[in-house]
Length: 298
Image (cartoon, rainbow, N blue to C red; front, side, top):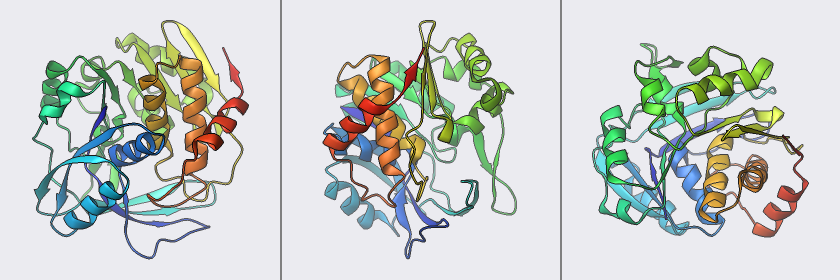
């Protein structure tokens, strides 16, 4: 089982190709859980939701056959996302759910634990407590640890104190290109190997860096695997990295090696961004077909 910690959000999304009529379910942990479950895995999401979306959230996850451990709170989290034709986005906050406080007993049954916050809802002390309670493979997407809200309601990025020591608690850390540059000071589009080496130096066993149209890099035990992106039309790239993580963790749960895992994750992400919203489809036959076409170099 994969247990994912991170608050769900209900977002409004506008891209050059689509515009959601209502707010739709998203969030790092939620999207990873959706991908994991759609591939056939057993997933459960731990997070906080306001009473405004609580019933909708339970219905959404149960419809997707995903377990949930939900703490009600004052308001649900959500973002307004506006994308330009180059994939750059402006991120504004609709609401922010409170920090997670519970670690469910089901952690004893998890073989993979994913920490995927959207906005400061997994405090460092909670993460340390989770690490103490499980021997499962722990995977981090650091996006929500590197975000804070400015006075104007915009999301800004920063480097929190103690992040190096925290990352070293994980078996796998998966930043995207922006997060990699924040963490290392190196633009991974210019020198992804150098950026990965810095993260390795923090004591992280496996580093995964996603680079959008430039693909992804996985570094583990001194071996570097570079995965080319699958050419596609990114109708909505919201959650691309989240579903990459979901595909990667599904592959790990099936004991695939890093080469096969990276190919499957790349295929999953390419399929997801061709669609919009949590109802995206991941037919396994198409995932396998695309994974077989991914160009990998060491």
